[in-house]
Length: 149
Image (cartoon, rainbow, N blue to C red; front, side, top):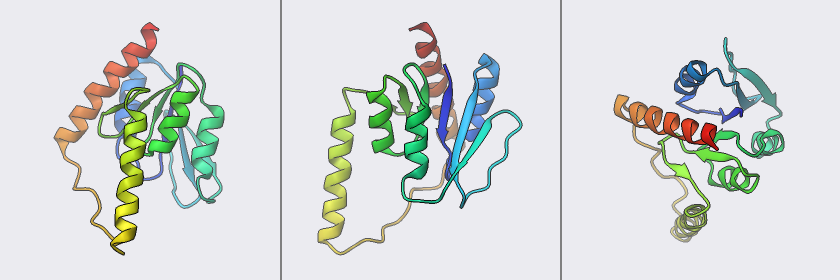
């Protein structure tokens, strides 16, 4: 099992690496040329800055049983399709049971924003220590589940 992180602007890289170190599992961080990442633990793969280049590279190298950390529902859906596990930076697991609903909600929200000509919306709220704790607990639980399969 390997862990792959869609690392462009990902706030949980340190948590992923800390937990992966504890279990001695390799981590690969993927980012585009607009982001500079270094790591003493993880392999870092830098991909060209084209639209979705990181997403496609991540999906091309992940396999059944791997864990993918991403906030992108489309990447999560493709990872699930390959038999990988996927988790959002909030700690929510993407599953075959919830991914269709999540993709539909994303589509409907985007459509509503377009109809309102309101393309600029507030970003996510500031991340808290509690958010990090929730992610860490959920990620470690997923990692243990993936290891038992």
